[in-house]
Image (cartoon, rainbow, N blue to C red; front, side):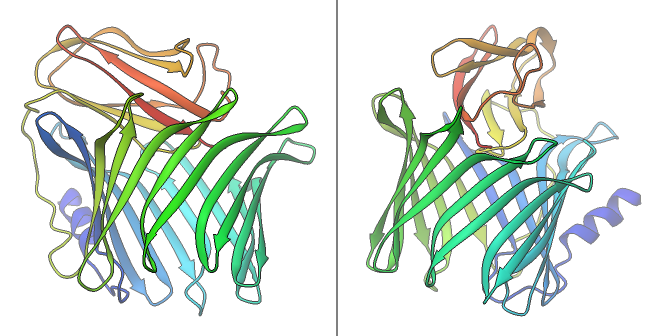
Length: 346
């Protein structure tokens, strides 16, 4: 009964904001096709409140394979519809953080992220009229604020054309990530992500948007760069209107191997999910972009058929926090081997 009441509470849309989705579904593309691995369910308790519940497939306390809650994010909006505060709770991990936004003349100028009541990240926003031109991030080191990263936006008219992320490293700003947008008329069509590798930009991913007849974003298709070409890797689908949040239990053993992670990009941790159609001996490891082993998450462990989730907190084998960057996570079993990318942003 307790479980039933919890599900009814999560999926009851009390007051849906106009034009906002009921849910977003995340799919990974693995041969022979798509498989659904994550859902976001939205509630709108009032005009100024939104709650987002993240669900993943996993085993609940009763040993049943079904949708379980991975985290809940709640935010409050002001009279202009701008979010002024967030509370994020990663269910089952005891992790919570709060974000408080400050506005001037209707524009976001500062966001403070707090963990356990202590401010640890400060974002400062710079505007040119109505255009956001830079986001400057600082982290608290226990004594004062120190530089961490900055994102600089470039425009053509009112269209955002490019976003450049730089990280602070030993007294200098270093290129990290570049996103370039392409438009179809006034509507964003797709963007390309690039990472800075040694002394030049290298492809990371290409992302296409699909819209419905009302001009709302319906799907986003994500293509990863494999060193030769872009290949379809995942997609997300937004659902609007009644019936979009129907969740059906799926307690079947997977028919195929699969590997994915969420969130991606991530900070401070990400969950790596993999499906095994048979009992397997599994090794799961993290590498940097040079192919150097960073950490071993699972080592020659016998695991049952089904879906498994492990968490990586962006540390190496000595439990030392790693710098921002692209990392590879690789799974090896007796019958399957696959490697994918994840992006750590600080």
